[in-house]
Structure formats: C-alpha cells, structure tokens
Image (cartoon, rainbow, N blue to C red; front, side, top):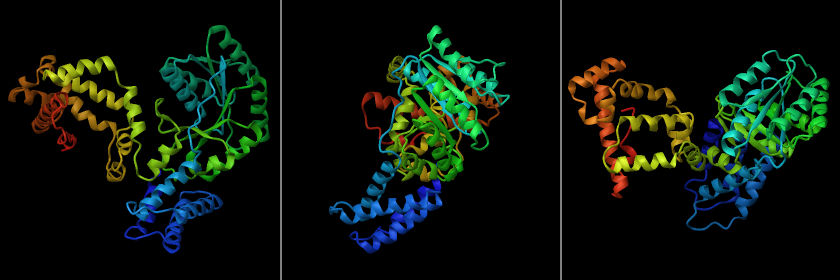
Length: 443
C-alpha cells in the first residue's frame, strides 16, 4: 500500500537533511520532488500543485525551533496536509434510524457485493447489529448467489426475489420484511455496469427515491486511479452519496484515488478494503493513513486489531499459567491462531513504526506458521502439555510426522523455551528489554 509514494516522499525529504535551516531555495527543491511524487502516484496535477503550495506557505512561515531539524519539520507539515487532504477526521455511518437503510452503489467489478458482506459482518460483530443483506442486482447472474455465499460465512440473512427483475420493488419489499422480522440494518446491494450509462443512473436514482436511505456508499476500485475519482464525481452529481469506499487498497495501487477523491467530491472516505476476506476491511482514518504513507506505521490500528481477538478471561488464565511456568505448546498454538485472525502478517508488521521499509522486499504471509503448527500438531497431547518431556526419540518421531527435520524441531523447542522464560520475566516485573529480538521464527 503506497510503497512507491512512501519511497519517493522519503527521498524528497532527504534534500533537507543536513540543512541548518529552512530557506526558500531548499524548500522549493524539496517540494518540486514532492510534487513529482504525487503526480507519479496519479494525483491530479491541480491538487498536487495546491498541496505543495500550502506546504510551502507553512514551511516558510514556520518558527523552527533549534531542537527540530528542517527535514523533520517538513515531514510534520506534509503529514498534516496529507491528513487534511484526505478529510481530516474519520466520519462515522449514520445508524440512528431503525432500521437504518444503506444503499451500495458503484460500477461492476468495483467490489460492491463483497463490501456489502464485509459491512454486514463489521456491523454485526462490532456494533451488535442485526443486518439484512438485500440482493438488488437483477442483472448479473451470479450476484444473488455470491451474496448468499458471503452471508452464510458470517451468519447473516439475505433477502432476494429471484423471479423479480424490478430492483425498486425488491428494495421496498426488503425493508417491509426487515421491519416485520426485527432487522435493524438493511444493506441494499445494487447492480453495476462496466461504464456509467443513463439507464444505470436512472435505476439507482429511482431506488434511492423509493427507499430514502440514511446512507449511500459509493464503492470504487482504488486501482483505477484518477478514473476512480472521475467516476465518483459523476455518481455524486446524480446520487449525492454520503461516503466513499475504496476497495483493493492492498493491490498495486499508486494511491492517487485515496489522496484526491475527498477534495474532488467533497465527501469522506469511510472504509477501505484491504483484501478479499470478509474481515479485511478498515474504517478510514485520514491521520493514520498519512502515518502509513510517510512510513510512520499505524500502531493504533494494530492495537485495535489485537483487541478484537483479545479475551480478558483467557488472558487472565494465561497470565497465571505463565507465572507458574506452565505455559505449554497448546497455549502457544492458541496465540498463533489469534495472530492469524488479526489479518495478513506482513500488513500487521508494516503497522509497526520503522518496520514497513525493512520488510518491504521480504516475503511474509500467514503460511509462514504452517511449519510451526505442523510440528506442534505432531506432538501427542501429553507432549504439548509437558514440553520438558521432549527427548531425542520423541523429537525424531515429531520431525517425521510433521515433514520437517530434527534440527527444525530442536530450533522451535529451544525458541519456545527461551520465550517462556522471557514471558515469565514479564509477569514477575523483571527487565525484559532482551525479549524483543528473542523469538525469531525464521532463524
């Protein structure tokens, strides 16, 4: 995500490194490079120019403290302006009505149906809502079935009328159904086209008038760059939508849509899709996104993802086991499972400040845990409960059963033993500064 833009901006700021103070000359040189970086990221020329002019005005007018280096000040100013460019603050959904009606719009292939499932999943899990998905795409043959498959995965109901080809009637009937059966959220998935046409816009406008939604979300493929911005503008002129959803932000996107769509359509980005799985969607925080673009990580989002998998009672039990030196391979297996549920390992690691650049070319995915899991699952229940029982003959059997070598089994057991000691030090309040580099699964 934004790797090329991040690299280009970092190189731009290096121009000011070693400079004793900010001058009009070195600011102009730096911002010339920043503007090129934005243009390469598919940011509209006018917006890129306005952005650098704002940064220049603030940089030259800044009272630079002796403790602040010029390039650090420039990073701060660019960060603040990026945040403002993307909307300043996050904007929540309007969920006050019961039921709350959410209309999903966008072109075909933008990810509307998948997003509808993701949104239902998020509102059910995080807000305690009871959503109803509505199959309003009457043209794409697989649309209804796709929505049903997604809904089954997240235990959500779908309203559909396979024989009815009138999306307005389907939507109105779905809302009646929701009121009768106690659904407090109605998410209406609509048809898309390969390009904007009058029939499409007239149809979705009619749906809007008929159901009067509290939220209209425009879903757009971020990989289409400025085309995404132009499409959003045309939709907004007709629909006056409430927010934007950028999908496929995990792909090879240059970031131009995320950076400029807010300033063009004057509507906030509310969600971003970061993968195909139903939990791979984030609420959009402009400041956090600016952090990530500038290589500062996103530790707040990382903590929030961890908290979603955090069970207070389980943590309390685990702490007691660690204190008594009873942490075993079953506990370790649970921790791996929780980490995997948080999302893609490389994406999670990139949220840690300073790590993103270091791991950019490193191939890390959730399959990295397979060898470790295979070794642990090849142990008997007794062995997982009693790590000290793992003698030489047992290790040979475990290696054969897991398709690994005795050396790999030995390495895992050694690392597990050292980690268990460090974890006990945490609970006893001793110095744990050595722990951070202790458990390297790849070495």
